[in-house]
Image (tube, rainbow, N blue to C red; front, side):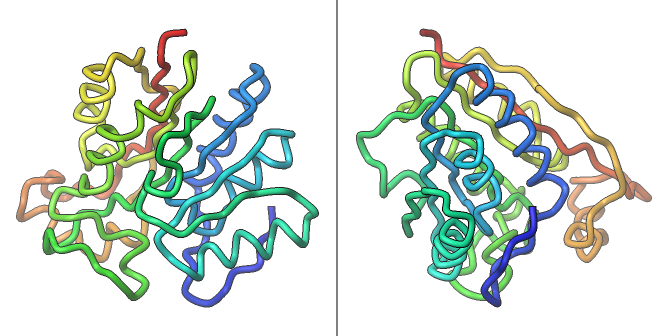
Length: 217
């Protein structure tokens, strides 16, 4: 999928397309309402709309929301795009699928950036600032039988996400695993990651996963 991006909007990478493929499976299984949280370019929400689902997208970035709306209009797809903090714009609503590719790169501070390109990837010292909130807030926005799909790096603790979602009463599994070299964002910080024990000395690879968590019907 080729997208027009407003300057400052993060370009989709391989983890985005991992999530989009997993989402297509859920739509194919009959799940029709999709929420894309931390939508970025809107690639995942547009995938949902192209598959016939009712798509809603949320991002904290005004430029991101504008990019989603532009690409939806160009493709004649309907995507409701909202600016806001995670689930704030859809308070009280439930969805068949919540898909999210949040910022998960460990940063040098727990203070999250409020502007600049780093806002698209910086996620606190352990990379879990957004992941933990999604695990806590997301389950209440799932319809019965609904599914959460979460993308992250193993460097941020795959097990921690699985445990939190399971503790919320969801049936949780790692649906997709892909091991490969560290991406450019992680590589920029490899020395810091080694010093803090987030990767082993000399480690230059990671596992990127899609975690699937289903609410009982």
